[in-house]
Image (cartoon, rainbow, N blue to C red):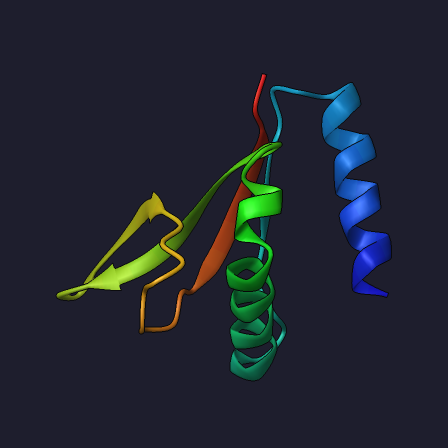
Length: 83
């Protein structure tokens, strides 16, 4: 099922290159799962997409580049096709 979502994102962003897609899990566990998937396939995804995240740092929530070595949990993810 997740592979289907990846193909949909690829097709959609190929037609709409300026769009940034945001996603998060419906539960903390699902968000952590998405983070693991992004971490595992980062070298592949980063060839086509700029990936960033929402992260909490000292009480501030900010958008930061995805870091595959980050040990904490991200709140949400953004993907935008590299033009």
